[in-house]
Amino acid sequence: MEKYLSTVGYWLGLICTVLALISRVLLAFNITPPRVGASGAIPISYLSFFHGAVLFFVLAIASWCRSPKT
Image (cartoon, rainbow, N blue to C red; front, side):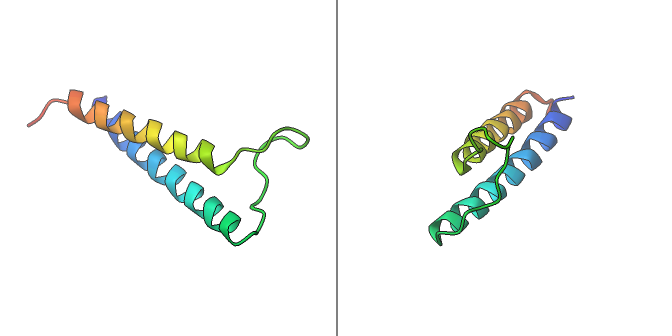
């Protein structure tokens, strides 16, 4: 189970990192990225994706540490 959590956490962290970097690059070039979230609500910023990436990478590291080594 820990290996599965480690793998899923790694890939989710990688996806969040890519989305955050794309969003940040678009903002750097003064291009408004596509709005994520419900209309009329506060949009999700690139910082949300960066925080999500950190969370998933820490999950992957913690799961890897708990998995039995062969």
